[in-house]
Each structure stands twice: as C-alpha cells, then as structure tokens.
Amino acid sequence: MAEEVFIPIDRKKMILMTALYSILGIGAFLVTYYLGENQDWVSPTVFKVASIVVLLFFMVLAGTFAKNVKSTIAGLTINRKGIDDQSNSISSGLIHWKDIKGISKVKTPATKYILVMVKKPQKYIDNAKNSAIKRLLNHNLANYKTPIVINVTALQTSLDDLEKIIAEYSGRFGTK
Image (cartoon, rainbow, N blue to C red):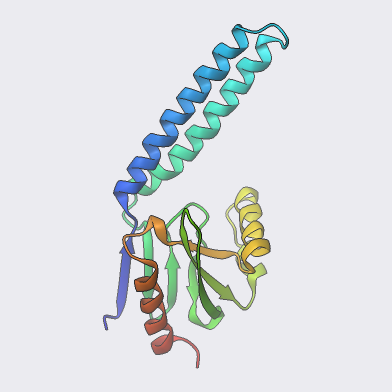
C-alpha cells in the first residue's frame, strides 16, 4: 500500500455540470424575463428582477463546478494524517484519523456518499469558511448525523473502492 492515495475529481462530469448549469441559468433567465413582458397580472419589473436573481444563482452553481475543473488539488487525498477532502466547495479539508469515529456509505438514486463520522462535529462546522457553508454543514449534520459528507459521484472511483481504501488506511494509521 502506498503512503498516500489521491483520487481526483471527475473533470468530465464537472465540465458537464458547468455547461448544464450555465445553460439552465440562461434558459431560466430568458423564460422568466420574457414571461414578465407577456403578462399583465404582476409588474414586469418583478419578473425582470427575479430573472436576474435566477441567472445569478445558476451562474454561482456553474462557477463552483468550473473552479473545481481548474484546480489541481481538487479531489480526495488519503494518507497517514487522515482524509483531506478537497472535492467540492463545502469540503472540510483535512480530517485527522484521531477525529474519525466511523465511516459509512449512503446510496441514493442520484448519488453516492461516504459519511465520515467525527468525534466533534461542531469543530468542523465552526471552521467553515463562511455562513453559507456553515448552514450546509449543519444541514448535513441534521440529515446524516455528521457534517462531513463526501460525494463519491464527483470522484474518479466507485463507492466500494473508496470504502475499501479508507478502511485500509484507517486500519493502518487510524487510532486503535
């Protein structure tokens, strides 16, 4: 077993998601903008403002995927220190083995997740970069009982392979 395993993000999926959200944003903008001009029950200004908000929302989503495409460190690194999650915008960074109390997996029809159960979840929530990420981590904690949720669908690996790799490294470097 190597000292370190790096699992990169699936750049093709990220490019596809960037294009998809860009197209959806422009489409939603056009529909909302022109719908406002062709109706008379609400002021067209309301629709124009809503169309700009919708466009900005989708462009922010597309931008987060585009940022990952350009990043050379985007992915998951597993080594003697722990699991360094840099796979998305709400990633918590390095999760030390001593902080991890368990690993589990969740499959939904749309995606697959690895849940990293940590001893002090609030520590990772408090270290969030901003309040929006804090809210998302709290949402993860409420839904999955941990703030650290790794989206395996975004990585170039399978759920079972990633689970095996984490188990191997946890057995080798994790706290006994």
